[in-house]
Length: 461
Image 1 (cartoon, one colour):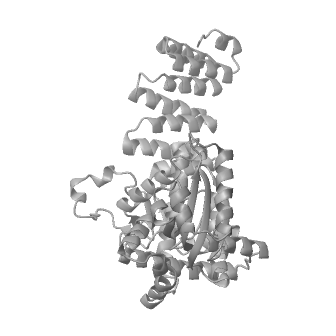
Image 2 (cartoon, helix red, strand yellow):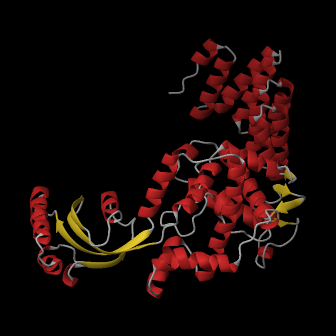
Image 3 (cartoon, rainbow, N blue to C red):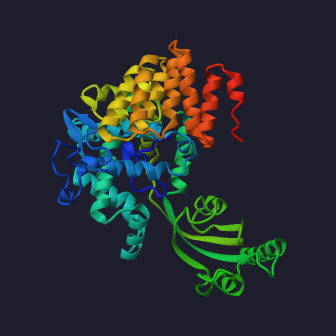
């Protein structure tokens, strides 16, 4: 997933949780400490993330763990690629991101040796933020669009951005990363077009039940010609415009920002100069004629903005990964939750180690799925002795789960005791009765063991 550093006043913001959050304060908690005054009402030991991750000898705060997981969920809940992953894969990915966040937030706050003064923040606000609104109502709208609770929240976010920008830029240049002329130019043109507001007048010639697209285009061209010939925009707007918001005041609209209309509209309007009359712009709702009256820009100088672009390039490069790994070496990181450790061992093909972690996870949570995962893992590692043992344990815990009988049968058959393995398969078959799922599992098991004739006898349709 592409990372972006938070450009605090951008109109279109994509934030990577690992790099854009405001510094949290205390990231770690000692085991048993209350998170807040209400935590006594909740058994924290039952919460997701409790005593899961230690950094520098202290557990990551359970409240932070859950808050970050909720943010992770919200970010990826509609991502098709993420939805295809297993819970274990998602949790493992989340844990990596959480480790990165905690380490980097601590590094920024305590080890980067970079400070941002209130004067620097105020100067940034005066230059790039304040021009975006001319009154309290516009300020409130802007804060809401950016997710700022209030002015203090905005300034804290900007301070965080300025600090991280300095650190990342220094790391990027030290790593020898550069921008091509095309990367620099394309990014800056886009930045300029999205960091301005305009006062304008408009005339909308709508496409509707009484007017076809062709008729609307013809009328719009006629009005445009009248305007070019010097006729009053205000009078023509009152006569022809179908824009109910601006028609009666002569088409006047103030403080128009990009991002609220179609792309063709923004490309034309926010690249135009004050005093320019634009040819009719085709939109889904009709043809719109626009005259630019005033342009207020708040974009950064090209050289300054290029530093932000370089930082983004750095964050999505192998250079960043190398840099982060060098920082992470100074932190003692310990995953203490057996379920997280189990999957990490499994993906590294340390099957016996993974299976033992899964069994420990069961002892901790009493969730039978961990015994099932231990069975799968021993089977994948071809440790038939341990597969027999753990499957027998699973069957004792949950005797209605035919899967454990099938795992035991596989262990026996592959371990050399084929006769006992086949008997166990027959027991599983009787236990399954008419359950299509279990019958399918047994059929597949026969096929895995090379017993095609036995598999063919099982009807799962």
